[in-house]
Length: 321
Image (cartoon, rainbow, N blue to C red; front, side, top):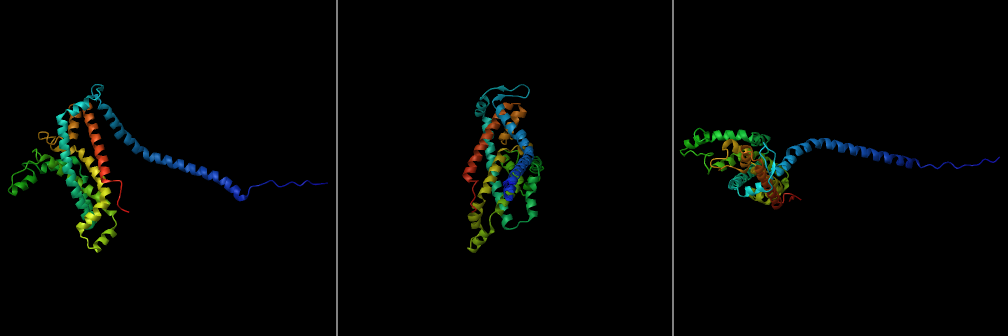
């Protein structure tokens, strides 16, 4: 009897079988991990995205729509096309408010930037005490309304400690917030006092990124502190300084609360900045359509200034190699 021989069934190598079964499982595991990371990221992003949509995106779109309407809260919005923008172009108070705002911005940005840069350099070159940094930041922790009220009392023409000191020195009292010449510079100085510490700490953080080796090499070559400031500090600090300037310019154009609690736009509209004029048109005269048009104009102006600043200062480029 002949026994038929049969060949054993072909099998994949053990390693091949392992690889054949492992790859799909690993791929599925990675896919599950990726999906889990995506869902987790969505959970963390959702609150910020919701806040951005509700408090920024939707009000902006709503304001742009209202700028083409006549709306007073009591009746439905009536579409008027470009009427609000035509009125704005021919409104002398709008242009005067814009001029007052620009004056404030120039004084505020000039004094704040120079003072903050000086404080930041002194902190970086002389001391890095956390106590001093806290003292410098203290005014920023006070709200604009409280700071405005305190300075209003301190600079009062009759009872303020500022004028008491001036009178004690034999000089005439100065109506800081009641005179057309002094009002805007005084408001600018109040806001410089409040914000300069925060701006200085932002610049101080930028100074920390500059390698100390550069200063040490410059000292070996006999460079003075002044020369190192202009040849090393300023060029390498430029990107941070550019971003700080963009932030402070945007914030300065939006000044409102200090004006509201100190001068209320007076005297004789000398401090009637654009934001205060917009507020008066909306909530004082219920001209929400016209106020929205001025707000859109301010948005366009700030966007143009930001783009121009970003390009001129090359904020996205660094000289650090």
